Image (cartoon, rainbow, N blue to C red; front, top):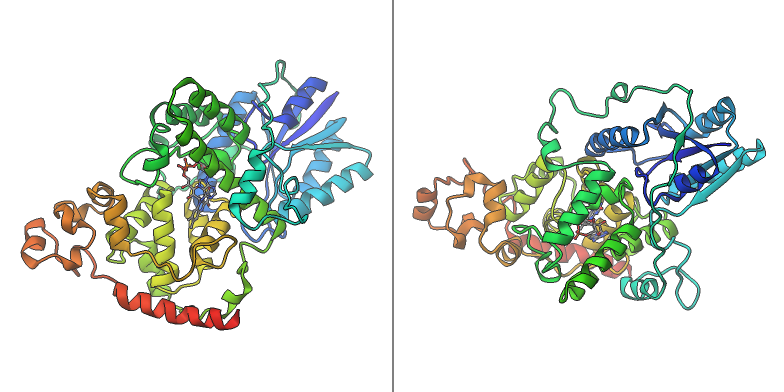
Length: 473
Ligand code: FAD
């Protein structure tokens, strides 16, 4: 029997239950569908994600030997292909974004009505969003009890690659290059092949490298963007090139082999827990990417300034730690988590621009853009989300820089025009004496911008705006 396996956010061969079960039953017809709308998906793939997807599909097609590529609406294409190929069943691994849930539910019903067997599996999460509930029976809204409940459940052992994989012949599809997922004029991703290795092999390499070189010290050093103590697994996890079950198994194995890594491993796995929690929230609150989770924030008096938004996007705010983060994002498709929190906070609190503008920019520019993690991250920073940072806690860009990039290496890397400033001044060039600026070749307003806002004044205005939220509460 031939089974159609519809790949989506599970671009791997190992620990892929839809593929494993299909391969055990006979031959496999592997398919990927690029759906670019119109449809009801209001969050299409961003430009950086498209670049990643191209390379990830290329790697998967190579590893499988063959992958049928189709372009259009899966609700039409999957039944058509199933019929044309005469498959006995259709398998997929479940997705949890609201439009995907609606699409898959409808497609499953249509296939069953047409007499095709459908099986779906969990490949993306340790616990599916409906598997954990509070004692009173609802979804969790706070991370700590959520993660405690998750830790109380065993984690399934990852599946190996299918021992025998026979790929069905026939059925032509599109050419990957014709999808034009990669940028051309200009090719802003030209250097990314040196930074990132999309695909299952690249994900495994990244995980092993992190466990060898980054895990030791993770609990304390993960907040330092000037160091390399984070895994950078996020795009691999988003596209399903590695599964959270594999990450847990390999991390526990590494921690069990080397004494003293337990705390680091627990902290790292708790971050995987935040990913789980974000998916739990998105599933239960499907408007999370569009609406304030706390509706009192609807009263917040956001400013409207496309000029300030552009200054933030280009990393020209005059606050070096914020600018370094925004430039790292543009240059690499990634930003360190600590700096994401600061850059996002700056947009929302110092510039008082709506978090949805930042969410959209991140969605377009991050290689790990993920509807659940991104929306939950932005709402956490804005104060409007579940278990969020309190609105009145406003990060000082200078204080955060001095604390988490103490020698200024991160800022010097991404804002090279400040590289010659001494450590004392690299996070606040606007406070440096003229003679220091001159010696470092910095001319404010010419080689590096004056601060777009004054920190103390911006803080006061943000708090004044927050009064409207309090009154609404
Ligand atoms: P590590 O520290 O090595 O963590 C391991 C894994 O845990 C990550 O790969 C990720 O899958 C998960 N993880 C870590 N922190 C978080 C978190 N706070 N929330 C959810 N999952 C987490 N993450 C995305 O994957 N996609 C996004 O679009 C995204 N947008 C964000 C937007 C904002 C405003 C903020 C504050 C955070 C966002 N994050 C997002 C979460 C986090 O910043 C990234 O997951 C992390 O920086 C990725 O780097 P890493 O793989 O080296 O992390």
